[in-house]
Length: 343
Image (tube, rainbow, N blue to C red; front, side, top):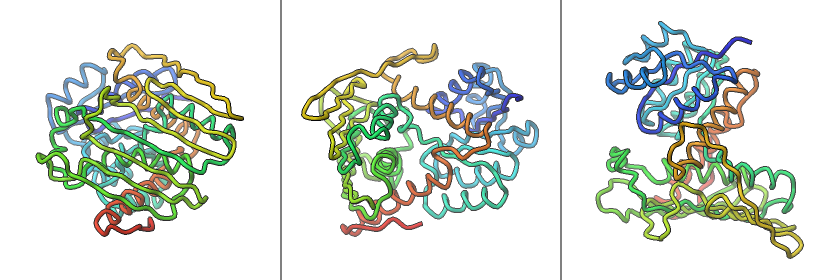
């Protein structure tokens, strides 16, 4: 099988992890052909670092390079236009989370891909972080029985505004950017959601949008999950960028702790184990390893699914359900009432 020629749109802060991931997957059929950014300096820098053609106009890049797979890693408000453009030009399209600024935009992207028969996926990488992936596998194996309760936490005071200053003016921030990961995990762990409630806070006066969200989900299975997300924690140690998870079932409990440690309780006995992280050479700061490995493993899964011609685990159609949870969470926060996610 020939290599999959990949074009990346967006060369900003987090896009560096996508670019490095695609280069790391060269032995698995990835060929990074082109990069694009509206900032010529960023596009040229990415071109030099990753040995790819560079462009500042996505339409020109797509028409010139004709890639097999387009990876869109830009600000969320650009996703719909870029995805619709890429869907017309390439067999496969990946959109970085969050899928789109509004549920209607995400649905429009999914519908356009379906009409053209374009393979579509969302780069939702938290569920691919090694400790979380291991926990998911243990639950899928039935080690605690059908999950009936979960608590998912990402609480940090890390200065995310230093690398993404546009966060300061986003009208919707914490749920849309961070909570979306937690909601996706809740779906993956306990299944689809019947209804949810949400309370938001703006604890940092510099912001336009919310920086803290606390959500309560009732799943169709009867399970309940609590999702906590904030950029304004003052707790030390600050565990950024780690996600803490606890899941309970009739046969036991599983807890993902700091440092990738997992505690499994069964028959009244607890067993602890660690998650071994194998770091590619481009991960130089171990603090970021769990996040960057999530990006790498997500890219690996998406590449394999595309090359095999099968839907990704986070296909556009699947992630539309996560987008519906984000939409329901904002409606719930505004009304102070539980809301049913609708698509």
